[in-house]
Image 1 (tube, rainbow, N blue to C red):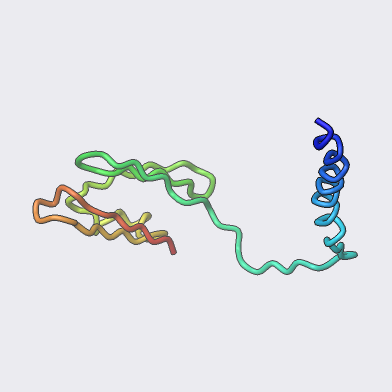
Image 2 (image 1 turned 180 degrees about the horizontal axis):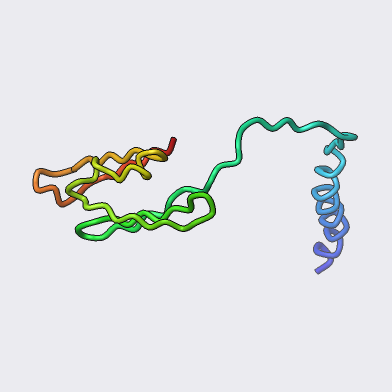
Length: 106
């Protein structure tokens, strides 16, 4: 019991040093300038995959648009979707039951 009482001040000192050291090492800067380049764009389309088709839900010019694309015709997307993205379908097996769809936004 006396050993624990002797070690309590040392343990408290170690805990205090542990919490105060990182705070002392931080430096603050008086200010700065952030430069932004780019454009504000619309959010990405939501993709919902089904067995025979995919549904693309896109927000275009503030309006929600839903497009249904047959998986057999995935490269032949509607014109309004082609203006914002390209879709590639890569089959992983010969039966064409497993695939990876890559949607690349412009």
